[in-house]
Image (cartoon, rainbow, N blue to C red; front, top):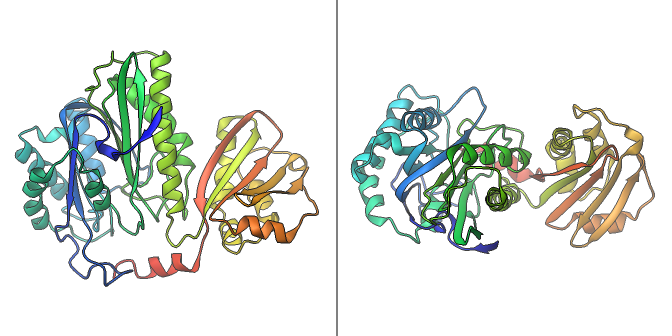
Length: 415
């Protein structure tokens, strides 16, 4: 397996486009008012019908695009050809939300001459604002004209809200002598604390695989990648992961748990894990990526609960912002995690490119160099390593520090 370029266009037969259509007209960018307009709508399309799997937010308040996409895939037998997505407006908590989301699908379907049930729709942005459909109506024909097998960057930029960087990752791998590709794009910077999904994530592959295995693999890997991500503890109303497989690599269809399945699963994990890391590092106002690596848990579920408890702790996040090596905050977060532990078995270390330092052994803080610890914690990527010493399971959760800028960004998010 090797990393390649191309994002959602890395897989054979996928083309994409993006543009600015004017969904949000009040200014350019609240954080950077002098910058030009950013793309706010995109489309990507497969040359052939795709087997499609998806995972959605578990927030009880769901965006209209979630409802419409779920209904479309149920009607189409989990088949899709095209995706349309917009930023700036979440189309959530609006009386006409379903109507507008269905209209977006119909516009794409008419333009591409496909059934509207084979269109996936997604929106992200401010909740509770009525989505103006007129800019979308004008944009769809132009998006169709602009579709390009190298249009991934235009699409990736269109789903950004408070994101500061585009998030793309793709790999190449071999299945039964056939070269396959799998790539994706993601958006997310705030309101990230997933439950079965996170932010907006779109993944494409030219590998041929049955829907049952495609859905299982996606659901399984979400649990140990996106579900191990938290920026601020808020689960969005519009979270979705969509995975489309068009089979154009012409490999023998993967329909059982064999070596080919394991290869595909590894490729999907590689893409999703790296997108997860990018999402965490670009948390709103963040200055550093924080990873909590938990080992020695009794089972996978308990390792996830423990790692996320540490990553989600506001006190841990602010300590990391201040490069404060007080591991009492780490132990406190482990202690209130909903798992059974022996506190006298816990070890804690801090790791970065600047080195590694042990700060806790057997549940007790040990003498360590505050100067060395601060040097390690001032790095822009820091790992908090926890060993529970109670089993053989482990996991890594991803997050970021909590800074003054997080409050500033969310204090004027609608302006």
